[in-house]
Length: 140
Image: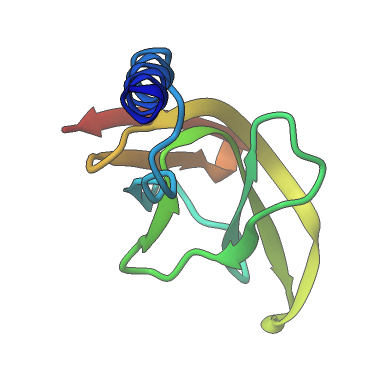
């Protein structure tokens, strides 16, 4: 009888733990989304040209996840779902693009990358007025 009471109490406790949200093993893996960055230029270009870069930082973090040049055909990266800060900037070619000036024409945006979805960011550059704006759209 004592054994039956102990088994009953153990089963009851296990059921309460499960109902109260106790973990049943490892947490599910964080889900990823996709970040797509493209650049568009309006008006005349810089005399020697420029090279575009983006830096992605998780919201609230001090260190960038990556800071890379944006290829002419765009940049696509898989990132964990969550909130981010994206900064875009140009480095103007000085003489030729083998020698780049410091970061200039900077713009930034906050965004959320959805799990299993994509965030498309278009960097809109207007070199004649040293302007940069970002257009953000999401797909599920």
